[in-house]
Length: 120
Image (cartoon, rainbow, N blue to C red):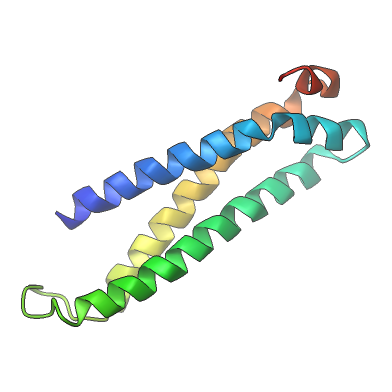
């Protein structure tokens, strides 16, 4: 059940972050038209995506620890603050956020800035 929940969270995170980066195509075009390098644009977008993911992981990790205490009798083989499980889930969600951001930002940073501005 936990694996299914993780898969669902990863799918949702990928969809939301990919859509968010694709939505910023005009902004990326403006930045590149004003002289920003492709690598600086990639870093900016990846940094903002990881910040969103980190905030979600922090809130979700805290909520998981708080909810695990009353659910401890039901949890089999894991304690209320199982650090390995929480770290593994956090690492998987960070990898998904990078993957979700990387493809759209790479595509947007490769196109001509004028084309990106005409995108909308």
